[in-house]
Length: 205
Image (cartoon, rainbow, N blue to C red):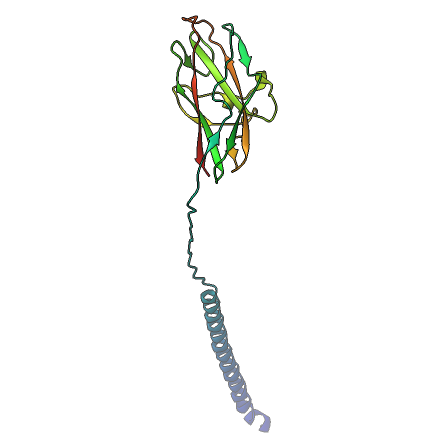
């Protein structure tokens, strides 16, 4: 009988233990919420610390007192008698010296067409093809690149080497050696000598 009377306190103890466990679980939940909140705040704080503010300042300066001057020893070249439907290349070059005080980039164009012909990309009746290439020695004229051709309709294009690259940039107090070649028209409406006026234009770099 004494043992049966002591049973209720045991149940009360179990209930008390359950309450303690429940209280501990709530405490853990509160602690978890606090930890999650702390992690979020730390992540936000880290994100704010990575922000970068950058200002860009561009400084420019333009040199003055520069001059561009190209000096050729001669201003003409005569191919002489050349048959139609054939090609001819210069035996001697024309050298341009940059006597200015700044580097230049050179372009070429035909300034005045001959009386009976016009320039083109391919020889045709009364149509010729004029070439110029930069090279320290005489190039192989049959291998001149397409970029060596003077453009049609008096248009301007870059001066290049025989391979069609570079060649048009000349530093001050430097020189460039020019070699000319021509593809004659397939037929000509005139037997008179034809004069082609070409331009080599220099623009300071």
